[in-house]
Image 1 (cartoon, rainbow, N blue to C red):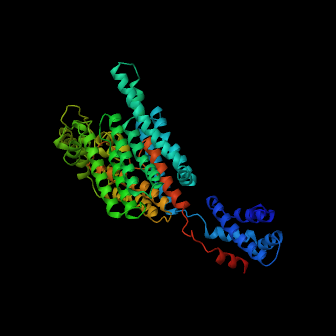
Image 2: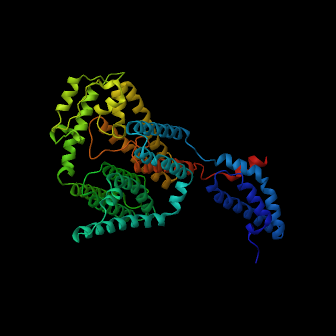
Image 3: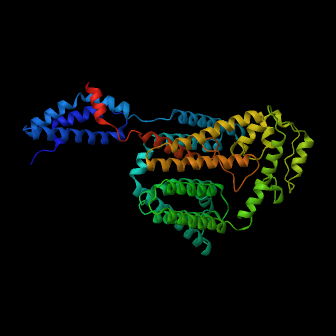
Length: 495
Protein backbone atom coordinates (compact mmCIF):
# COMPACT_ATOMS: atom_id res chain seq x y z
CA UNK A 1 0.00 0.00 0.00
CA UNK A 2 1.58 3.32 -1.06
CA UNK A 3 2.36 5.90 1.58
CA UNK A 4 0.15 8.96 1.94
CA UNK A 5 1.64 12.09 0.37
CA UNK A 6 1.66 14.00 3.67
CA UNK A 7 3.66 11.20 5.35
CA UNK A 8 6.75 11.97 3.27
CA UNK A 9 9.35 13.99 5.14
CA UNK A 10 9.97 16.26 2.14
CA UNK A 11 6.30 17.15 2.05
CA UNK A 12 6.11 17.74 5.80
CA UNK A 13 9.03 20.15 5.72
CA UNK A 14 7.68 21.97 2.68
CA UNK A 15 4.24 22.41 4.24
CA UNK A 16 5.76 23.53 7.55
CA UNK A 17 8.00 26.11 5.87
CA UNK A 18 5.06 27.54 3.94
CA UNK A 19 2.54 27.65 6.80
CA UNK A 20 4.99 29.16 9.27
CA UNK A 21 4.97 32.31 7.13
CA UNK A 22 1.19 32.65 7.50
CA UNK A 23 0.45 35.01 10.36
CA UNK A 24 -3.25 34.22 10.50
CA UNK A 25 -3.36 30.75 12.04
CA UNK A 26 -7.02 29.82 11.28
CA UNK A 27 -6.30 29.63 7.51
CA UNK A 28 -3.14 27.50 7.82
CA UNK A 29 -5.15 24.28 7.64
CA UNK A 30 -6.95 25.45 4.50
CA UNK A 31 -3.67 26.40 2.81
CA UNK A 32 -2.09 23.10 3.85
CA UNK A 33 -4.92 21.16 2.23
CA UNK A 34 -4.69 23.23 -0.94
CA UNK A 35 -0.92 22.71 -1.20
CA UNK A 36 -1.27 18.97 -0.61
CA UNK A 37 -3.84 18.82 -3.38
CA UNK A 38 -1.43 20.45 -5.84
CA UNK A 39 1.43 18.17 -4.76
CA UNK A 40 -0.79 15.10 -5.25
CA UNK A 41 -1.70 16.29 -8.76
CA UNK A 42 1.99 16.66 -9.67
CA UNK A 43 2.88 13.28 -8.15
CA UNK A 44 0.17 11.67 -10.23
CA UNK A 45 1.57 13.29 -13.37
CA UNK A 46 5.10 12.03 -12.64
CA UNK A 47 3.87 8.53 -11.84
CA UNK A 48 1.95 8.43 -15.10
CA UNK A 49 5.25 9.27 -16.82
CA UNK A 50 6.87 6.18 -15.31
CA UNK A 51 8.57 7.47 -12.14
CA UNK A 52 8.31 5.55 -8.89
CA UNK A 53 6.37 7.15 -6.06
CA UNK A 54 9.37 8.30 -3.98
CA UNK A 55 11.01 10.09 -6.91
CA UNK A 56 7.68 11.52 -8.00
CA UNK A 57 7.14 13.07 -4.55
CA UNK A 58 10.65 14.57 -4.46
CA UNK A 59 10.31 16.08 -7.92
CA UNK A 60 6.82 17.37 -7.17
CA UNK A 61 8.06 19.19 -4.06
CA UNK A 62 11.00 20.69 -5.96
CA UNK A 63 8.75 21.91 -8.73
CA UNK A 64 6.44 23.62 -6.22
CA UNK A 65 9.12 26.26 -5.65
CA UNK A 66 10.70 27.84 -2.58
CA UNK A 67 8.37 27.27 0.36
CA UNK A 68 9.31 30.44 2.28
CA UNK A 69 8.68 32.66 -0.74
CA UNK A 70 5.36 30.94 -1.37
CA UNK A 71 4.36 31.38 2.29
CA UNK A 72 5.20 35.08 2.29
CA UNK A 73 3.25 35.64 -0.91
CA UNK A 74 0.24 33.74 0.37
CA UNK A 75 0.38 35.68 3.63
CA UNK A 76 0.33 38.99 1.76
CA UNK A 77 -2.82 37.88 -0.07
CA UNK A 78 -4.58 36.13 2.80
CA UNK A 79 -3.71 38.62 5.52
CA UNK A 80 -6.23 39.41 8.22
CA UNK A 81 -8.44 42.45 7.81
CA UNK A 82 -8.24 44.74 10.79
CA UNK A 83 -10.64 47.66 10.58
CA UNK A 84 -8.47 50.32 12.16
CA UNK A 85 -11.27 52.85 11.85
CA UNK A 86 -13.57 50.71 13.99
CA UNK A 87 -10.77 49.78 16.40
CA UNK A 88 -9.82 53.46 16.77
CA UNK A 89 -13.39 54.46 17.57
CA UNK A 90 -13.60 51.57 20.03
CA UNK A 91 -10.49 52.81 21.82
CA UNK A 92 -12.05 56.27 21.92
CA UNK A 93 -15.21 54.79 23.49
CA UNK A 94 -13.16 52.93 26.09
CA UNK A 95 -11.33 56.14 26.99
CA UNK A 96 -14.67 57.89 27.46
CA UNK A 97 -15.79 55.00 29.68
CA UNK A 98 -12.64 55.35 31.81
CA UNK A 99 -13.18 59.10 32.10
CA UNK A 100 -16.80 58.50 33.04
CA UNK A 101 -15.82 56.07 35.77
CA UNK A 102 -13.31 58.55 37.16
CA UNK A 103 -16.01 61.24 37.21
CA UNK A 104 -18.40 58.97 39.10
CA UNK A 105 -15.62 58.09 41.53
CA UNK A 106 -15.10 61.78 42.19
CA UNK A 107 -18.80 62.20 42.95
CA UNK A 108 -19.25 59.09 45.09
CA UNK A 109 -15.78 58.69 46.53
CA UNK A 110 -12.91 56.31 45.83
CA UNK A 111 -14.40 53.68 48.08
CA UNK A 112 -16.03 50.30 47.67
CA UNK A 113 -18.54 51.64 45.14
CA UNK A 114 -15.89 53.02 42.84
CA UNK A 115 -13.74 49.92 43.13
CA UNK A 116 -16.66 47.55 42.55
CA UNK A 117 -18.24 49.38 39.61
CA UNK A 118 -14.91 49.94 37.86
CA UNK A 119 -13.98 46.27 38.28
CA UNK A 120 -16.22 45.52 35.30
CA UNK A 121 -14.37 47.80 32.90
CA UNK A 122 -11.00 45.93 32.84
CA UNK A 123 -12.89 42.63 32.69
CA UNK A 124 -14.80 43.96 29.69
CA UNK A 125 -11.62 45.15 27.95
CA UNK A 126 -9.97 41.76 28.48
CA UNK A 127 -13.02 39.99 27.03
CA UNK A 128 -13.05 42.41 24.08
CA UNK A 129 -9.47 41.47 23.22
CA UNK A 130 -10.20 37.76 23.71
CA UNK A 131 -13.24 37.78 21.42
CA UNK A 132 -11.43 39.97 18.91
CA UNK A 133 -8.59 37.46 18.62
CA UNK A 134 -10.40 34.14 19.14
CA UNK A 135 -14.08 34.82 19.73
CA UNK A 136 -15.53 34.11 16.30
CA UNK A 137 -13.55 30.91 15.84
CA UNK A 138 -14.63 29.65 19.26
CA UNK A 139 -18.29 30.51 18.72
CA UNK A 140 -18.66 28.86 15.31
CA UNK A 141 -16.77 25.73 16.36
CA UNK A 142 -18.78 25.24 19.55
CA UNK A 143 -22.32 25.34 18.21
CA UNK A 144 -23.33 22.30 20.25
CA UNK A 145 -21.93 23.91 23.39
CA UNK A 146 -23.95 27.04 22.62
CA UNK A 147 -27.07 24.90 22.29
CA UNK A 148 -26.36 23.29 25.64
CA UNK A 149 -25.71 26.75 27.10
CA UNK A 150 -29.11 28.02 25.93
CA UNK A 151 -30.80 24.97 27.41
CA UNK A 152 -28.82 25.49 30.60
CA UNK A 153 -29.91 29.13 30.91
CA UNK A 154 -33.56 28.19 30.39
CA UNK A 155 -33.28 25.31 32.88
CA UNK A 156 -31.60 27.59 35.43
CA UNK A 157 -34.38 30.13 35.17
CA UNK A 158 -37.03 27.44 35.56
CA UNK A 159 -35.19 25.96 38.55
CA UNK A 160 -34.78 29.29 40.29
CA UNK A 161 -38.45 30.08 39.71
CA UNK A 162 -39.42 26.78 41.35
CA UNK A 163 -37.13 27.52 44.29
CA UNK A 164 -38.57 31.00 44.72
CA UNK A 165 -42.13 29.70 44.59
CA UNK A 166 -41.27 26.96 47.09
CA UNK A 167 -39.71 29.42 49.53
CA UNK A 168 -42.87 31.54 49.31
CA UNK A 169 -45.34 28.66 49.66
CA UNK A 170 -43.54 26.88 52.48
CA UNK A 171 -42.25 30.06 54.19
CA UNK A 172 -38.64 28.98 53.80
CA UNK A 173 -35.94 31.43 54.78
CA UNK A 174 -33.82 32.30 51.75
CA UNK A 175 -31.71 35.43 51.38
CA UNK A 176 -33.60 37.92 49.23
CA UNK A 177 -30.37 39.68 48.29
CA UNK A 178 -29.25 36.64 46.28
CA UNK A 179 -32.25 36.97 43.96
CA UNK A 180 -31.88 40.73 43.68
CA UNK A 181 -28.25 40.33 42.62
CA UNK A 182 -28.60 37.33 40.31
CA UNK A 183 -31.83 38.45 38.65
CA UNK A 184 -31.65 42.22 38.73
CA UNK A 185 -33.01 44.17 35.73
CA UNK A 186 -29.43 44.93 34.66
CA UNK A 187 -28.40 41.26 34.60
CA UNK A 188 -31.61 40.02 32.99
CA UNK A 189 -31.44 42.75 30.34
CA UNK A 190 -27.79 42.02 29.57
CA UNK A 191 -28.50 38.30 29.41
CA UNK A 192 -31.30 38.80 26.88
CA UNK A 193 -29.03 40.92 24.69
CA UNK A 194 -26.34 38.24 24.56
CA UNK A 195 -28.93 35.52 23.92
CA UNK A 196 -29.84 36.93 20.50
CA UNK A 197 -26.48 36.25 18.76
CA UNK A 198 -26.38 32.82 20.41
CA UNK A 199 -29.82 32.05 18.97
CA UNK A 200 -28.59 33.16 15.54
CA UNK A 201 -25.65 30.73 15.74
CA UNK A 202 -27.94 27.91 16.86
CA UNK A 203 -30.53 28.28 14.09
CA UNK A 204 -27.82 28.73 11.46
CA UNK A 205 -27.06 25.03 11.91
CA UNK A 206 -30.61 24.13 10.79
CA UNK A 207 -30.90 26.83 8.12
CA UNK A 208 -31.72 24.17 5.52
CA UNK A 209 -35.07 23.78 7.30
CA UNK A 210 -36.13 27.42 7.22
CA UNK A 211 -39.57 27.11 8.79
CA UNK A 212 -38.23 24.99 11.63
CA UNK A 213 -35.45 27.52 12.27
CA UNK A 214 -37.97 30.38 12.40
CA UNK A 215 -40.37 28.51 14.68
CA UNK A 216 -37.61 27.37 17.02
CA UNK A 217 -36.02 30.81 17.28
CA UNK A 218 -39.32 32.52 18.09
CA UNK A 219 -40.15 29.80 20.61
CA UNK A 220 -36.80 30.24 22.39
CA UNK A 221 -37.15 34.03 22.43
CA UNK A 222 -40.70 33.88 23.75
CA UNK A 223 -39.74 31.39 26.45
CA UNK A 224 -36.84 33.59 27.57
CA UNK A 225 -39.18 36.59 27.59
CA UNK A 226 -41.77 34.86 29.78
CA UNK A 227 -39.21 33.43 32.20
CA UNK A 228 -37.48 36.79 32.49
CA UNK A 229 -40.84 38.40 33.19
CA UNK A 230 -41.40 36.00 36.10
CA UNK A 231 -37.93 36.70 37.46
CA UNK A 232 -38.39 40.48 37.31
CA UNK A 233 -41.92 40.49 38.66
CA UNK A 234 -43.15 41.59 35.23
CA UNK A 235 -41.43 44.97 35.30
CA UNK A 236 -40.42 46.46 31.96
CA UNK A 237 -36.70 46.39 31.13
CA UNK A 238 -35.67 48.42 28.08
CA UNK A 239 -32.99 45.93 27.03
CA UNK A 240 -35.75 43.33 26.83
CA UNK A 241 -37.44 45.31 24.06
CA UNK A 242 -34.07 46.02 22.40
CA UNK A 243 -33.31 42.29 22.32
CA UNK A 244 -36.70 41.57 20.73
CA UNK A 245 -36.25 44.26 18.06
CA UNK A 246 -32.70 43.10 17.27
CA UNK A 247 -33.91 39.51 17.01
CA UNK A 248 -36.78 40.41 14.68
CA UNK A 249 -34.48 42.50 12.44
CA UNK A 250 -31.75 39.85 12.09
CA UNK A 251 -34.27 37.09 11.42
CA UNK A 252 -35.80 39.22 8.67
CA UNK A 253 -32.33 39.80 7.21
CA UNK A 254 -31.64 36.06 7.26
CA UNK A 255 -34.82 35.43 5.27
CA UNK A 256 -34.21 38.28 2.81
CA UNK A 257 -30.57 37.19 2.29
CA UNK A 258 -31.58 33.58 1.56
CA UNK A 259 -29.70 32.32 4.59
CA UNK A 260 -32.78 30.36 5.63
CA UNK A 261 -33.88 27.91 2.97
CA UNK A 262 -37.46 27.41 1.92
CA UNK A 263 -40.19 29.05 -0.12
CA UNK A 264 -39.97 32.77 0.50
CA UNK A 265 -43.72 33.35 0.87
CA UNK A 266 -44.00 30.59 3.46
CA UNK A 267 -40.95 31.85 5.38
CA UNK A 268 -42.32 35.39 5.49
CA UNK A 269 -45.69 34.05 6.63
CA UNK A 270 -44.11 32.13 9.50
CA UNK A 271 -42.00 35.16 10.29
CA UNK A 272 -45.06 37.45 10.43
CA UNK A 273 -46.94 35.03 12.67
CA UNK A 274 -43.90 34.79 14.93
CA UNK A 275 -43.71 38.60 15.25
CA UNK A 276 -47.37 38.82 16.23
CA UNK A 277 -46.97 36.06 18.82
CA UNK A 278 -43.72 37.49 20.21
CA UNK A 279 -44.94 41.07 20.60
CA UNK A 280 -48.30 39.78 21.82
CA UNK A 281 -46.41 37.85 24.47
CA UNK A 282 -44.39 40.95 25.33
CA UNK A 283 -47.55 43.02 25.86
CA UNK A 284 -49.23 40.19 27.81
CA UNK A 285 -46.25 39.70 30.11
CA UNK A 286 -45.97 43.44 30.76
CA UNK A 287 -49.59 44.39 31.49
CA UNK A 288 -49.70 45.27 35.19
CA UNK A 289 -49.87 48.82 36.54
CA UNK A 290 -46.57 50.67 36.41
CA UNK A 291 -45.04 47.82 34.42
CA UNK A 292 -47.59 47.90 31.63
CA UNK A 293 -46.67 48.85 28.10
CA UNK A 294 -49.41 51.48 28.00
CA UNK A 295 -48.14 53.17 31.19
CA UNK A 296 -44.54 53.24 29.94
CA UNK A 297 -45.60 54.68 26.59
CA UNK A 298 -47.57 57.40 28.38
CA UNK A 299 -44.59 58.13 30.65
CA UNK A 300 -42.28 58.26 27.61
CA UNK A 301 -44.27 60.81 25.60
CA UNK A 302 -46.21 62.63 28.34
CA UNK A 303 -44.30 62.23 31.63
CA UNK A 304 -46.46 64.84 33.37
CA UNK A 305 -49.54 62.66 32.82
CA UNK A 306 -48.30 59.94 35.21
CA UNK A 307 -46.96 59.91 38.76
CA UNK A 308 -43.75 61.94 38.84
CA UNK A 309 -42.12 62.10 42.24
CA UNK A 310 -38.62 63.53 42.42
CA UNK A 311 -37.02 60.08 42.34
CA UNK A 312 -39.11 58.76 39.45
CA UNK A 313 -38.17 58.32 35.80
CA UNK A 314 -41.07 60.59 34.83
CA UNK A 315 -39.65 63.47 36.88
CA UNK A 316 -36.22 62.80 35.35
CA UNK A 317 -37.72 63.22 31.87
CA UNK A 318 -39.48 66.43 32.90
CA UNK A 319 -36.26 67.84 34.35
CA UNK A 320 -34.20 66.84 31.30
CA UNK A 321 -36.66 68.51 28.92
CA UNK A 322 -36.66 71.71 30.94
CA UNK A 323 -32.86 71.88 31.21
CA UNK A 324 -32.37 71.13 27.51
CA UNK A 325 -34.82 73.89 26.60
CA UNK A 326 -32.49 76.31 28.42
CA UNK A 327 -29.26 74.95 26.88
CA UNK A 328 -27.12 77.38 24.85
CA UNK A 329 -25.11 76.75 21.65
CA UNK A 330 -21.96 77.02 23.79
CA UNK A 331 -21.44 77.12 27.52
CA UNK A 332 -23.27 75.86 30.56
CA UNK A 333 -26.89 76.33 31.55
CA UNK A 334 -27.38 78.95 34.27
CA UNK A 335 -30.39 78.57 36.56
CA UNK A 336 -31.67 81.13 38.99
CA UNK A 337 -33.31 79.97 42.19
CA UNK A 338 -36.69 80.96 40.78
CA UNK A 339 -36.18 78.92 37.61
CA UNK A 340 -35.16 75.90 39.61
CA UNK A 341 -38.18 76.31 41.89
CA UNK A 342 -40.39 76.14 38.79
CA UNK A 343 -38.82 72.81 37.81
CA UNK A 344 -39.11 71.45 41.35
CA UNK A 345 -42.74 72.51 41.53
CA UNK A 346 -43.54 70.02 38.78
CA UNK A 347 -42.86 67.17 41.21
CA UNK A 348 -46.00 65.67 42.71
CA UNK A 349 -44.45 64.97 46.12
CA UNK A 350 -42.69 66.91 48.86
CA UNK A 351 -39.25 65.31 48.40
CA UNK A 352 -37.63 68.38 46.84
CA UNK A 353 -33.93 69.09 46.49
CA UNK A 354 -33.60 72.83 47.10
CA UNK A 355 -30.69 74.50 45.29
CA UNK A 356 -29.44 77.91 46.30
CA UNK A 357 -26.62 78.21 43.72
CA UNK A 358 -26.36 78.61 39.96
CA UNK A 359 -26.11 75.32 38.11
CA UNK A 360 -22.84 76.25 36.42
CA UNK A 361 -20.81 76.98 39.54
CA UNK A 362 -19.54 73.46 40.04
CA UNK A 363 -20.33 69.88 39.23
CA UNK A 364 -21.68 69.11 42.69
CA UNK A 365 -24.43 71.68 42.14
CA UNK A 366 -24.99 70.41 38.60
CA UNK A 367 -25.30 66.93 40.04
CA UNK A 368 -28.25 68.18 42.09
CA UNK A 369 -29.85 69.91 39.13
CA UNK A 370 -29.62 66.89 36.80
CA UNK A 371 -31.42 63.61 37.52
CA UNK A 372 -29.83 61.08 39.82
CA UNK A 373 -27.06 58.92 38.33
CA UNK A 374 -26.65 61.41 35.48
CA UNK A 375 -23.06 60.23 34.91
CA UNK A 376 -24.48 56.85 33.98
CA UNK A 377 -27.98 57.39 32.64
CA UNK A 378 -27.90 60.92 31.24
CA UNK A 379 -24.39 61.52 30.00
CA UNK A 380 -25.43 63.05 26.66
CA UNK A 381 -27.86 65.40 28.39
CA UNK A 382 -25.07 66.38 30.78
CA UNK A 383 -22.74 67.20 27.85
CA UNK A 384 -25.38 69.47 26.32
CA UNK A 385 -26.37 71.18 29.57
CA UNK A 386 -22.76 71.64 30.70
CA UNK A 387 -21.01 72.50 27.41
CA UNK A 388 -23.79 73.57 25.03
CA UNK A 389 -25.64 72.09 22.07
CA UNK A 390 -22.75 72.41 19.62
CA UNK A 391 -20.27 70.49 21.75
CA UNK A 392 -22.90 67.96 22.83
CA UNK A 393 -24.08 67.31 19.27
CA UNK A 394 -20.49 66.94 18.07
CA UNK A 395 -19.85 64.25 20.68
CA UNK A 396 -23.13 62.55 19.77
CA UNK A 397 -22.13 62.52 16.09
CA UNK A 398 -18.79 60.94 16.93
CA UNK A 399 -20.45 58.24 19.03
CA UNK A 400 -23.15 57.65 16.40
CA UNK A 401 -20.38 57.21 13.83
CA UNK A 402 -18.93 54.44 16.00
CA UNK A 403 -22.15 52.41 16.08
CA UNK A 404 -23.08 53.06 12.45
CA UNK A 405 -19.58 52.09 11.32
CA UNK A 406 -19.95 48.80 13.20
CA UNK A 407 -23.17 48.03 11.30
CA UNK A 408 -21.50 48.99 8.00
CA UNK A 409 -18.46 46.89 8.80
CA UNK A 410 -20.63 43.89 9.67
CA UNK A 411 -22.62 44.17 6.44
CA UNK A 412 -19.41 43.99 4.37
CA UNK A 413 -18.33 40.62 5.77
CA UNK A 414 -18.37 37.94 3.07
CA UNK A 415 -18.63 34.89 5.32
CA UNK A 416 -22.35 34.27 5.75
CA UNK A 417 -22.40 33.15 9.38
CA UNK A 418 -19.85 35.77 10.41
CA UNK A 419 -21.94 38.47 8.73
CA UNK A 420 -25.17 37.43 10.46
CA UNK A 421 -23.43 37.22 13.83
CA UNK A 422 -21.71 40.60 13.45
CA UNK A 423 -24.88 42.32 12.20
CA UNK A 424 -26.79 40.98 15.20
CA UNK A 425 -24.27 42.40 17.66
CA UNK A 426 -23.93 45.73 15.82
CA UNK A 427 -27.72 46.19 15.68
CA UNK A 428 -27.95 45.54 19.43
CA UNK A 429 -25.32 48.20 20.11
CA UNK A 430 -26.97 50.68 17.74
CA UNK A 431 -30.42 50.15 19.27
CA UNK A 432 -29.03 50.71 22.77
CA UNK A 433 -27.54 53.98 21.57
CA UNK A 434 -30.86 55.07 20.03
CA UNK A 435 -32.85 54.30 23.19
CA UNK A 436 -30.19 55.99 25.32
CA UNK A 437 -30.28 59.08 23.11
CA UNK A 438 -34.09 59.23 23.34
CA UNK A 439 -33.98 58.95 27.13
CA UNK A 440 -31.44 61.78 27.22
CA UNK A 441 -33.85 63.92 25.22
CA UNK A 442 -36.53 63.25 27.84
CA UNK A 443 -38.23 60.27 26.16
CA UNK A 444 -37.46 57.27 28.36
CA UNK A 445 -39.27 53.97 27.80
CA UNK A 446 -38.91 51.27 30.46
CA UNK A 447 -35.97 51.54 32.80
CA UNK A 448 -32.68 53.31 32.22
CA UNK A 449 -30.48 51.98 29.41
CA UNK A 450 -26.72 52.24 29.09
CA UNK A 451 -24.66 53.90 26.39
CA UNK A 452 -22.73 50.87 25.06
CA UNK A 453 -18.98 50.83 25.78
CA UNK A 454 -19.13 54.31 27.30
CA UNK A 455 -21.45 54.74 30.28
CA UNK A 456 -21.01 52.87 33.53
CA UNK A 457 -23.31 49.87 33.70
CA UNK A 458 -21.37 47.07 35.36
CA UNK A 459 -22.47 43.84 33.64
CA UNK A 460 -23.73 45.73 30.57
CA UNK A 461 -20.15 46.91 30.02
CA UNK A 462 -19.01 43.28 29.94
CA UNK A 463 -21.77 42.18 27.53
CA UNK A 464 -21.31 45.13 25.17
CA UNK A 465 -17.53 44.71 25.15
CA UNK A 466 -18.04 41.06 24.19
CA UNK A 467 -20.37 42.00 21.32
CA UNK A 468 -17.94 44.67 20.11
CA UNK A 469 -15.13 42.09 20.18
CA UNK A 470 -17.27 39.59 18.26
CA UNK A 471 -17.91 42.16 15.51
CA UNK A 472 -14.24 43.02 15.09
CA UNK A 473 -13.25 39.36 15.39
CA UNK A 474 -15.74 38.25 12.73
CA UNK A 475 -14.48 40.95 10.39
CA UNK A 476 -10.90 39.97 11.13
CA UNK A 477 -11.59 36.31 10.50
CA UNK A 478 -13.41 36.92 7.25
CA UNK A 479 -11.29 36.64 4.08
CA UNK A 480 -12.53 38.20 0.88
CA UNK A 481 -10.23 36.10 -1.34
CA UNK A 482 -11.75 32.75 -0.41
CA UNK A 483 -11.40 31.38 -3.95
CA UNK A 484 -7.81 32.50 -4.36
CA UNK A 485 -5.86 31.61 -7.49
CA UNK A 486 -2.98 29.48 -6.23
CA UNK A 487 -1.44 29.06 -9.69
CA UNK A 488 -1.26 32.82 -10.22
CA UNK A 489 0.55 33.26 -6.90
CA UNK A 490 2.75 30.23 -7.52
CA UNK A 491 3.92 31.36 -10.94
CA UNK A 492 4.43 34.96 -9.77
CA UNK A 493 6.72 33.65 -7.00
CA UNK A 494 8.59 31.18 -9.19
CA UNK A 495 9.20 33.62 -12.03
